[in-house]
Amino acid sequence: MWKKIFGNKDPEKVPSDTSWMDGIDRARLPRHVAVIMDGNGRWAKGQGLMRTAGHTAGVKTLKRILKTASDIGIEALTVYAFSTENWKRPHAEVDFLMKLFAEYLDKELQEMNEENVRIHFLGRIDGLSGNLQKQVREAEELMKANTGIRFNIAANYGGQDELVRAAQSIARRVLRGELSPEAIDESTVEDCLDTCGCPPVDLVIRTSGDMRLSNFLLWQAAYAEFWFTETNWPDFTPEEFVKALVEFGHRDRRFGGLNDAGER
Ligand code: FPP
Image (cartoon, rainbow, N blue to C red):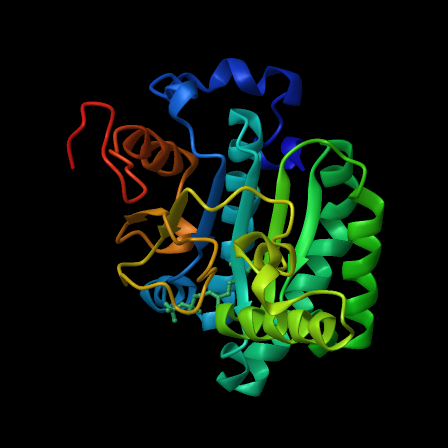
């Protein structure tokens, strides 16, 4: 994959070509970055193409951003590929997206594995087709021992749905007598989320101008910083991703308290 992203360049030499990464203060990097990859349809319209062409172009951007995040040393990257609400789209578009996910897994799995990526899926995977479910589970199994970037793909995912599933799972434990209601705390909930084992989201990036969370990672993004750009996802570049990371490094994060200077 890395080779494909950077054309014919020797993947070993890719880091020496990334001088635009120099502004990054590694001590102030986000551990977990979440991305709402919006604007595929608008990009396609602007090019006089079908909406589906925007999704195909969006896959190329995703590959570049995963490579960049991994190179920089981001611990976890979570992308919003398909929401529980996206089923409302025309059948042909939904069908196209499902085929695109299957093709992506088919083509990229081996190289992602070689690059030590640990893929994981968030959402109601049991709502996907039988074949896609099989691919998802095989991909997770193949990469489960990898130690590189954790790459979460949210597919058939909704933040509210995830919290409902967590509540159901906790209620079942209470009913079985394994847990008392008083013992339920934040970590009980976190352990039941699809992102279990990931650090909280530090930075949410949304492309294409809209400024909302759209039911994405409602719990995990409780103290996230937000970064918005007008750029449509297919045009989003590694340079712009790095710009978001650099700006994140300048944010004053207080988590409800005071900063180091004792100020709000
Ligand atoms: C939002 O743009 C994008 C999506 C609903 C699909 C995202 C999917 C990809 C980027 C394809 C690659 C994903 C994987 C995991 C292979 P939109 O269609 O809502 O654009 P619009 O708001 O301009 O209409």
